[in-house]
Structures are given as structure tokens and as C-alpha cells.
Length: 102
Image (cartoon, rainbow, N blue to C red; front, side):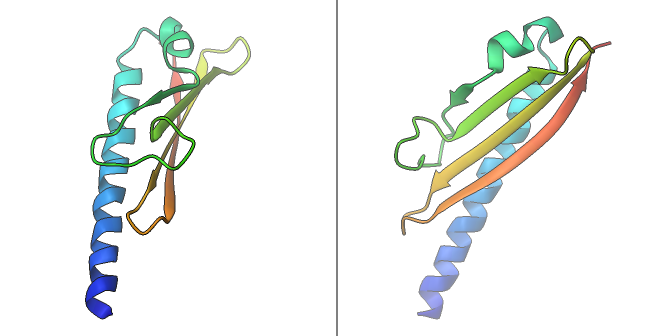
């Protein structure tokens, strides 16, 4: 039983690493996009993540919401990566950040 638990923990840790790398990569992609195109290109978009199985009812594990705060030059970026492990448990990792137009 402890071997199975160790294997499950190892899988969870591996998948968390995949999820964090995917979220960080998407933040970098967004940061390198023309600020005026961020909302149009990324808001409410989902993306596949190699190595992760999305939970039931979700097309892709990575979801982005991007919004501009009023008429300011500040944009909030929220990324959630959700996945389902082999044992059926669902995990999510959120990453929230802000971008300021220069």
C-alpha cells in the first residue's frame, strides 16, 4: 500500500510540475504579446497541456482569463490548470498576475 501511495504522490508531483510550467509558459507568451491584443487573443481561451488529462467536461486543462482594469493600463491575467489523475482525483493550480502597459 505504501508503494502505491508513493507512486500516486510521485505522479501528482510530476503533474503539478507540468501544470506550473504550462502556466508560466502561457504567462510568458501573453507578456510577449502586444498589450492591446491580450484580451482579444487570450480572454476565455483554453489550451491543451501535453501530459495532463483534463477533468470530465473540460476540453483543455489550461484556461486563461484576461481583463483590463477599466481604462487603466493594467491587465489582470488569471490562469488555471486543471487535470485528472489516473485514480480520478481532480487537481487545479491557479496562477494570477498583472501586466502594465508601458
